Image (cartoon, rainbow, N blue to C red; front, side, top):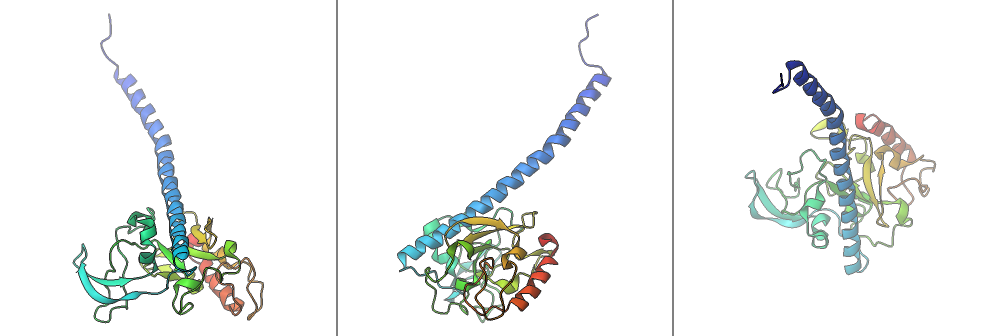
Length: 264
């Protein structure tokens, strides 16, 4: 007698095989998606760095001015009803060279639709959204993007070793700049995570003054801290090139940095 279908046992075997294949393949697909996002983040920070270098060519070898600027005039309302004010930082200065707001957010960032804050800039409000176009995944190194360290701006020729000094930093915060003192900090929405996006590997992406990018553990950016206070930092210190950083203070921050779970 000719059979017209499968037996129950045969169907169960097929279902079991499909389940086994799914259990094998789904983690592979998830890893592939995660790797694609990491690659996109690396590409984004590269584009941000190239945008800064193009800006430099058009503005007499000057890096964008650090800190926040603007007169806080209301220019609209954000998606959540919060006031949008006329406030900007270096990320807006380089936007014309990128012309894609998506570049300013790493797809692995947990709150990728959240815009930048003008926190403390506008006296009549605690928080205000800055003008659209930029998100919060990237910050400048304090050596040029913090107006306390570069009150009159800084020339691209000042960094003495452009291949080993950080220019753009992958960030989880709204700040336009990040410095060595932020390495021990955890992010506001999760105290198990640092200020620098770890991508689940303990490493973040960094763009250097010569335009190349590299994935490095944040705590490793201090290097071995082999110089004495007041001396010029060694080449493995990726933040500053002038004499004065107290290597003992930095060593303490490095230890604290290593206490952040994702940086271990």
